[in-house]
Amino acid sequence: MGDSLSAAYQMAPHAGWVALLENKLKQDFPQVMVINSSIVGDTTAGGLQRLPTQLTKHSPDIVIIELGGNDGLRGLPILSIRSNLKKMIELCIAHKAKVLLVGMRLPPNYGASYTTQFAKNYVELSQDYSLPLVPFFLENVALKPELMLQDRIHPTASAQPILLDNLWPALKPLLSDFH
Image: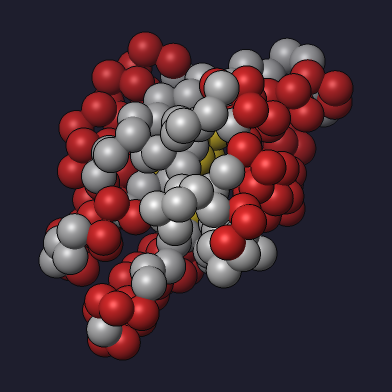
């Protein structure tokens, strides 16, 4: 469940990190199927609205939640973002799915208080629910202009392997049931 960062924005679908993950998993976990339910521009409210149908339709063992960036860029209330993420986590747990929470950070122009509270949402939710967390999905990407599109929000195709590298250490332990 994600937004443009997981929907291969402005690149061929096979170049996005989700497709790279699927290729990586085929080697060691051939029985694992990856379903990308990411939508460009999606918010936590949109993800929450779509999640019950996705859980029922696919019965996933693991759900990667990569949402919130668009909420933050729109300056939506921190408590609303947190509430939506919390409800998504609880829905996944109720469906017996493990959750990997993927955190995001915002540019400093949103103010120190807002950006700090925004990032803390992910940390606190991962602690509250004992979830693995990718603290900042765009680590080693966001501040490198050559890895970002001209909008300076979306990573390029060449950044996708780095995004997968950022996610993999938190995801790998969740795959132990598949050996």
